[in-house]
Image (cartoon, rainbow over all chains, first blue to last red; front, side, top):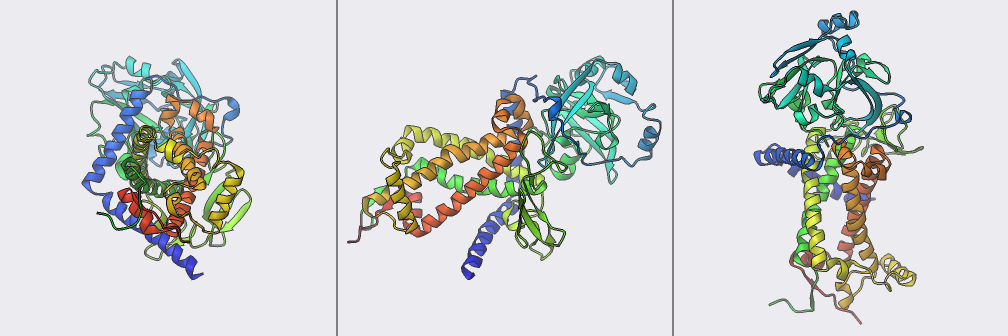
Length: 250
Length: 270
């Protein structure tokens, strides 16, 4: 018994030393540089080895998750959102602005009148779970082109109606993902209008990245040259508040 | 020059360098991986899997106020270690793996992912360099490849009996790897580590677009996640046995040979 306890203590000690070392190193400047360098390396290597339009796997109807769970905000609490929901999003407009020649305000009916794409894809949460669902909506790329995207634009930012303690959710992607054929603005999940917990009336699907990039409750899309002046400057809500990687391809 | 006794040059520098780099890398990957597991402590088979889907493994608190590991229908009480444990400050926590087994020590999925991917690159690049070096210096073919005779059932059975009786080779034979040792190292280098890298990449939604065949090979992302976990436990089991064998075979002799390359041959006692 005492032998077992001391072996466990040795394990605890070993683990503790490793952990104490790592926890002291993590906030230092060299460690931050190494972490951010790793993210940049992963991003660059992925872009290098992956054809620009390589598709995320698509599945058959039989693969769809029986229940597509929601995560993060399940119901935005703002009075603005409550008003929009009350009239079934008839007065909702998606504003497209920033570095574009023609800023737009598009209604849900106008979005549904555009050429649509339906795709059965897998949603991977950063936590580790996956759910498969069938998404329908217009492809983002042609909408950006129609708005006259400026050649100065480098990123597309998605502003949302949901907030966490007053800090609005937002996300951003690069132009490779913005113009990817599977990057759609989804208004339907599994053939039904997008439920509120899943982001009604409209959410982003950017299928080669993790769940926190799939911004829900879209309010506006903004083309920018740099992410520095948006939110906390790291390209997204979770990137700002919890140091999640901006590039969520892994 | 050297203290008396017979010495053999046992480990070339690429082997030694990779061994110690890997010792650090695997521990950081393992401990940050356990923290990533803590974010969703359930494992599934197939293409999808989330809270409403049946999981084959789960770790967490019980309604009775303890902790448990569940594998299929088997419930193993783990109060104090998994799913219900005290942190550094004596507070009860109900995450799956305890603070002393994870990096970082306090719950941080983002922090764990930072460590995990940094050292995943070290594992991939270091492993590739070691692989090439070991082909060139013939470490694989000379030291690790079991001979036909060593793989015969009689020979293997003898080796198993020797291990069970803790009877280790003396003399010149001690400088070479024995058959079970070779099989263990081959299993780690050619199976477990490649599987860790393969299943890790199969969980990346970006890499699924780059190379979708990998996902098919493992039977879907949640299967890949389960296999990733199982192979990590396999590596942990290897490390524990490896450390015990080093202790039993003579820790000073063994560790010195992995630092300097030179192995002091234990004398055969009459």
